[in-house]
Amino acid sequence: MATETHEESTGLVFHPLDQFIVKPLFGDGPIHWYTITNVTLWMAIAVVAVLALFVFGSRGRAIVPTRTQSVGEMIYGFIYKMIEDVTGKDGIKYFPYILTIFIFILFANFLGLIPMSFTTTSHIAVTAVLGFGVFITVTLIGFIKNGPSFLSLFWMSDAPALLRPIIAIIEVISYFVRPVSHSIRLAGNIMAGHAVIKVFAGFAAIALISPVSVLAITAIYGLEVLVAGIQAYVFTILTCVYLKDALHPHH
Amino acid sequence: MASGTTSVEHAADAAAHGAEASGAGMPQLDFSTFPNQIFWLLVTLVVIYFVMSRIAIPRIGAVLAERAGTITNDIAAAEELKQKALAAEAAYEKALVDARTEASRIVAEAKAEIQAELDIELQKADAAISAKTAESEKAIAEIRAGAVKSVTAVAKDAAKEIVLALGGKADAKAVTAAVTARMKG
Figure 1 (cartoon, each protein chain N blue to C red):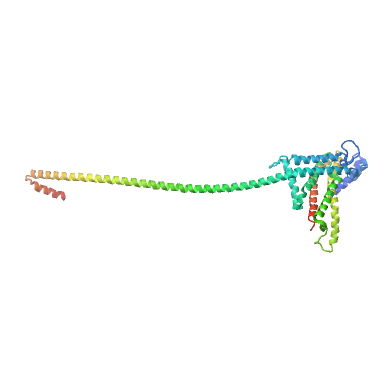
Figure 2: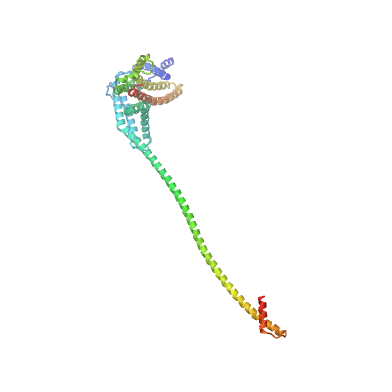
């Protein structure tokens, strides 16, 4: 990072995190919980995009689908099959919830790739609500469906008797770490990629480096497109895995 | 995740620099914006949930079910049509065989008929021919008889004349008997 300090002294300025600042859309006042901010704007755009794809796109209800309708059908089929494969048949009734989570993350991630946009999923506040929401819901489902026997999730009955208590402790810890890793994984990936792009963009101010910088931005952007899709997928499939643990805690 | 961690470090580092410049720190850790984000996130999730569960999922589910039904029906219909086509082919084959048998039967019948007619005609012709032959034979016999008679008469006359010319006395009875004897020989 020595070079960076050097460059900063020559007048280069890096504000890679300014893109994440939450600010009111109208005026400059304090941010209350109800204030309309750029978060509101980009979440609203996500909702509009969801409406466009799933309501407007499938309005024809065609047997032979239009392009937009078939995209909607593919997402539907993808998540439906994922739940069926990972969680089993009894996970299907949670399909609307899981689809909602997937759709939101997918759209937020991809809308965040539009230059000058605000990426809602880069904020730990957002992903933590999603992650802890999944954690609490899944834990409640586990106890409601299985009663106290849900705790057998932590008791490896096929492990050597001596190791079982130790494994149980590790399992409990890992269980409680789940929501943290679940939410930080998403926010971290999205934030890191966007910040890196901004850092490379800062270097573009130097004429000599700018071609490299532009190429690097292009490459990272391509990577980010992958990450945007993959992280939405990872978040969803982990939700399915946790749900499976809640529905079938017995190993 | 090696690149991920370095980029996070990178970002954190840059954030530190940014913080020096603007005094804002990581916007992600600015807790004063949390209620705002969480509120709008919940609103968004509720809206998306209702759009999904009330409109998108029933609609797409119905479309997919309908499509699956259509495909199943179409396959069944195709199977039925195939069976029909096979039946039609069998019927066609049968009709072909029938037509062939019928045709050969008609040919045989026609042949027999023609043969019968031909036989009758032949018989008629034979009969006519034999009648004609008999008639002719009769005529020939008559002619021959007539001829023999004339020859006899001519022979008797000629014999008498010859006898007279030679100077003999013609005995009519003896001449006649001699001619008759000669004629028989």
